[in-house]
Image (cartoon, rainbow, N blue to C red; front, side):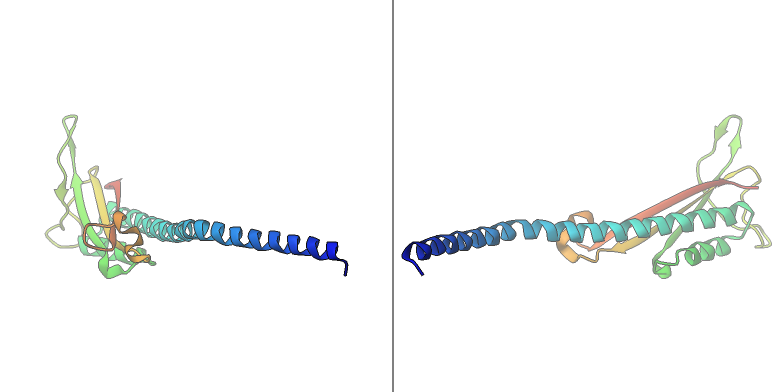
Length: 165
């Protein structure tokens, strides 16, 4: 090999080594950002899934309440409809209000009739079902700013209003 060829090869090797070093530095800068984006996408996807499931359960419970089901059946149907959620963690609030003289009354707790066979909302009243669910953050303390203070839980809420038939 000629001396000039060796010099050219050494220069090329030196450039490659410098390029590899700069790639390592760039990767060290970009990798944490990519990991943060990946985990935030996963967390938001799971949070959105829980929100959709809760809203679906709200609609199912409000539909059952609108046809006059008793409050125990409404709560059971809400929990059963939240298939991807821990059903024991779903809290259910049932309320109704009536329309009289051009004004809606305040929200009143929904109860059962004397026989316990139907809810006590009169026909034409609005029934509101509100569900809440504590979504545990799978990323732990990485997104703790989203959670309630001192916990790794985000409270997801859903509400649905339907007219009593």
